[in-house]
Image: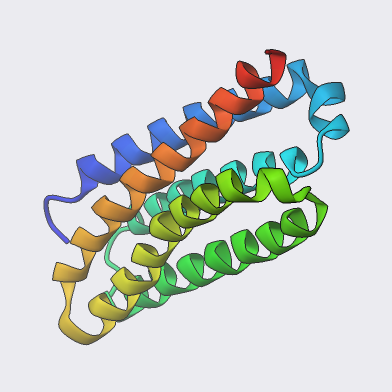
Length: 160
């Protein structure tokens, strides 16, 4: 795992900053967010994917861990994040009117593309070693994209 420390430090900082942005967006527009079906879930999804990056990166900064432990940690965080987003999306799906379901499918896909690589990373780390960490790069990028899109909706689009 040598050479990954700076990457995980950067990911901790970026995910913490973006988590703060989500909290600001929610606090500024709380009444509007609660008034629209699906938006509370969208805010929660953004927090889930950002917390997945924050927790994974924090855990992987702990020194002297075995690759088995790293794989278990990454897999566990990935499964929890994936399960949480699925549960939130199922709840939101029932609240949306038919006309809003098509754009919602894109949001579902983006969150799946964000969380599934974390699960794959954990499995690859457990079976093949440190090369599985490269799946985290892909997953983290999509976690940030999903969260930024949600932040945009919660801060800007909601006011249109």
